[in-house]
Image (cartoon, rainbow, N blue to C red):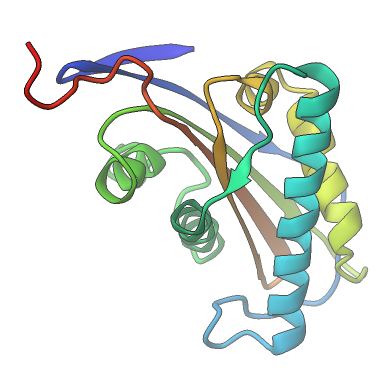
Length: 192
């Protein structure tokens, strides 16, 4: 785990990237929420829901003392933005083109300056098959669980909230899961 100090609180970050290379899907279709057909948006949301369920099943199985991850609307938006950024030409990485840790910056700006965070990302390319939300979700979770860094994020007791974003664009699908947990020893206002 990568540790860094920011102000009075320790912000712990574990970020990992995974590319699953097995072809799973079909025709190219746009994925921005405003321009994507309803069926594509529905498939993206279905995959997100399945990933959330499978992740909590893995936590219950392998980290029974860790809390179930609760969905968080702002973290969902961050995860969807991250997947959308990558799906529409941004680097498939935890950093943007300028080398900034995008998820960390967004969580600090929109959720909390203090706490624990993590990010798992995944990309899948395909040809000549149709998108299957269940199959895609299982591939994402199975792949993440097979990777030491991803697995550590999934099973970490430091996290109690999560956001998931899946975006389908052309012949690719991107999944991002961001994790957040409050800093247990964060500074209290007025204390020294």
